[in-house]
Image (cartoon, rainbow, N blue to C red; front, side):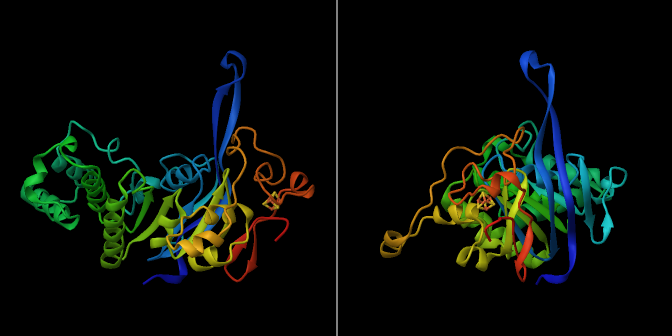
Amino acid sequence: MENLTKPLIEVQDLKQHFKIKGGLFGRATQTVKAVDGVSFNIYRGETFGLVGESGSGKTTLGRTLLHLYNPTSGKIFFDGEEISKENYRNYAKKMQIIFQDPYASLNPRMTVEDIIGEALDVHKLYSTKKERRDKIIELLKLVGLNAEQAQRYPHEFSGGQRQRIGIARALAVSPEFIVCDEPVSALDVSIQAQIINMLYDMQQEMKLTYLFIAHDLAVVRQLSKRIAVMYLGNVVELTDSESLYTHSLHPYTQSLISAIPISEPSVAKTKQRIILSGEIPSPINPPSGCKFRTRCPKAESICSEKVPEFREIESGHFCACHLV
Ligand code: SF4
């Protein structure tokens, strides 16, 4: 059960800007504003969904929370304490990540036992070799694998099984918070449901808190209590899952929702799909004013002149749009 009074994770005006070489002959330095001033809280026991197209900055945001990238500016708190450049290693055991690609995120030269055992080694979570092995087998069973599979290599497993290994590795250190970075995007639809159900069961059993990142709103909805929608480095809408689906306010969210397939043919017929023109612009030189204005079907002149404020429109429902 989530505790909605005390945030486990607090993010305040977080920015992650990367310098890259660009221009003629690669001599000029350009700035990619991958995350550009984002604030939200994640409560203990909650699944907080984060959605957006590829290039929206959601993966960078997830990794910056864990200090896999040092933030450019802004603050991140864990249970009331600020995580900094100096102390972030103290939080490595409490905060873990499950990566998107189960094919690329497991070392092909290591056995499953060593992949999971590595996390136990780093944090010295056993006193004898037997205890180490017992813990690994317990973790494998927890994710639906068995002891005989411990000596195998990643290539001997299917995509779904590899993701289970990735989850076991994240759970090895008994974390409190896990960034699930598109954990099912690379898997078949039939396998996706199994992994989502497993993540849900584990959350209940171990009282975990998740940041669940995906580009697919339908997937995020299955687990998340509240959802933030990201566009070009900013959160443009944030509310509970139900409100987002029944009365989204931001034109970008509305277009994402209109793209979700409906299985009932009579309902599908009446549904209007909002098709956005063009691709998401580059975060190197984003549009002035509202960054969504180049694709927004409702854009007006004010949208190019002024950045819309991210504000609370209804209780717990935040949106950044001049027309709302
Ligand atoms: Fe569209 Fe303007 Fe609202 Fe941006 S501020 S989402 S461009 S209407």
